[in-house]
Length: 112
Image: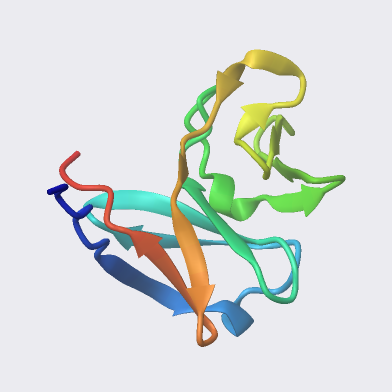
């Protein structure tokens, strides 16, 4: 007999259509400041909102060439994995998320 994996709890972050494609929005959920990036008509990605370089809010940035551009110093973070395109050792945390019925949802990351 094997134990079933625990069910994922999903936290609704907001409507996908409230974010223009290629832009980001700030939300707070699970006790964390988050950046929701709309990457296409049907997809969004969720990151920590603070840039690891200088702590700037990434939600003020935009998507360019597959990267979320930090609004403070223009550091590019790949939306695919959160790694800085200019410095491979630097990254921003990406969370498990999905779009369901037009809503962006975050898999509950548990305690901070």
